[in-house]
Figure 1 (tube, helix red, strand yellow):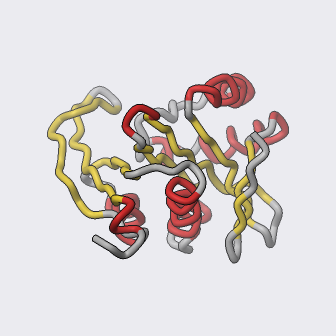
Figure 2 (spheres, one colour; figure 1 turned 45 degrees about the vertical axis):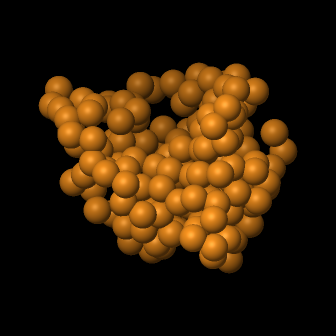
Length: 180
């Protein structure tokens, strides 16, 4: 996968093994980890390389993962992905941005680029995402990129030994194109 997306302040590119130290640095922050279902805490030292290799292995199954690079500093500030369900022409958006970069609009900027990529390049009919219902920072990103709240799945997952509600948002191709 040699896909590059560019926005005003960001470059989205394939994850590289050289990103592993930075991924571990940002993902080791408990405040970040607790907002996700999949980032472990504590983050196991040395495991980011295995994570990156696992991402590469899933590329042929419809997973597209980008390193989010801040142009100004040329540093990785997060990760964003779209996981396609090819049979249904839909993609699930997932993302995290390192805590030093929260509240600066980077998540929205990256999400907007990947939603556009999903419709324009992957030919999807729907892009959707879920977030902890008590994580407004994440679901506000979804709203800002045109997604509509579709429902909350009560106690649908577990994080840190407790059940959590997940709020789901989605946008259809016709809405994205302004026809819906």
